[in-house]
Length: 331
Image (cartoon, rainbow, N blue to C red; front, side):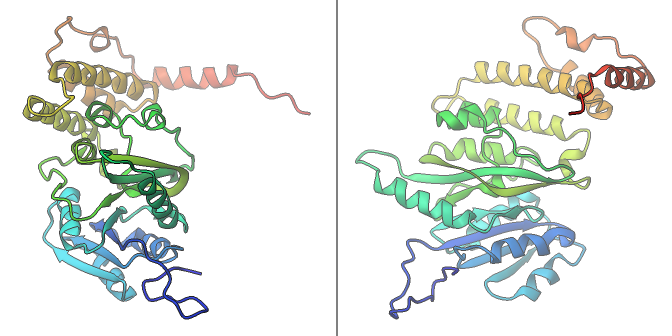
């Protein structure tokens, strides 16, 4: 049976509701997937008290799809501000003691909110004096759409390392799995059109504890229309994090600007090698040009001067390599 604010037990007593939950769904031209997304929310075993669809200047039927559902779904229309701005509007409109984020093309498993709230209650019951309060609860996820797999849980999450450095360098928290404490003044950086979620959680780490529910409870959808598919998306990701380091590390505890910039530059090279390995040539050349503009204290990396052959050469090589792979012996 689904739990609701007005639900009652067989004895006529109201079911216990330890906290209210608001769901915030930023949506821009999301009509293709929004119906599935909303169904995954409404099928929760722990029902949210409100579901806010922030229609961020859509030009399709996004708002109409949300409005047809009725309560607890409420559509808030606004001019386009970007994903971070839409999430901030949702935070400001939300009345819940907890706010769960969900992108308009992603989905939840039916027990997602129930498991998160149970973990919150358990963790809060064990808090001693002087221990920071919980500000974020996130879960594991699977990739749906183009492929379906469960990503490995990052080692930093397993260790419980939610430092500014770890959160800024690695996508430890998938936003569609995250539930944050309501009533906080903290907001997403609207100036960051890419990577704003990583900056948000890095800053949030100063306000309290993060806990991880080690279960796959959300589906992150991959499709061709995503902004991250654009060749320069990775560049914006790096530029915004470099900017945050320059503007904030002098006043942010546990944040060494020189160390973070060095690690971020190494990540640029790592992603450059990954783009070449995956034959993502548009991304590769965009990243290589960007990396060439960075200041490399130890000298120019060899990756920036590697010879790149015509694409047909790599195609032939990949075909030959696949032919040489040992085939499984039939049983």
